[in-house]
Amino acid sequence: LWVLTLTVLADFVVGIFKAKRIGDGIDNAKLRRGGLKSLLYIVFLLVAGTADATTTRFIEVSSWSLPKIPILTSFLLYFTYTELSSVTRNIEEMGFNVPPLLKSFVGRAKQRVEDEIEKIGPTEEEKKDE
Image 1 (spheres, rainbow, N blue to C red):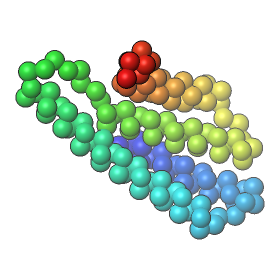
Image 2: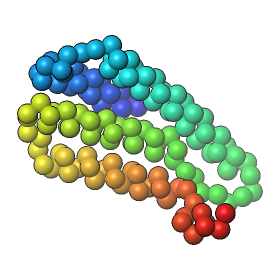
Image 3: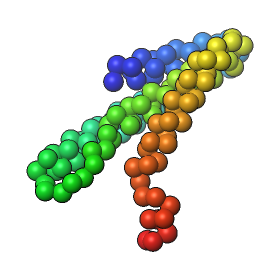
Image 4: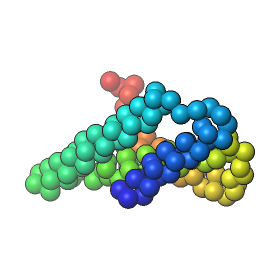
């Protein structure tokens, strides 16, 4: 949770520096969008944490053999890598070089999280059967 908080703050600070550097200016609409995004992150994390705790408890008390799906962790990782992607993109748009290794790491990590989240839902075959 701390890492996500730091990446959200970093995205905010880098976004302000970018706006000043390229002369784009800082307007209320952009600040509202950023605040709304942060608020939605909190809501999603609360819902994901509740779902995580509920499914964990259900699995513990039921006789069913269900896999544990790390809902909260998935959301945390996805949001963190989304924010890191935004930070690296903003740094590049300001004219600074982002080390290729860092860009590659962030891109691959975000893709891995997206792939893992995709595995949670029904397969293409299961979707066709519905």
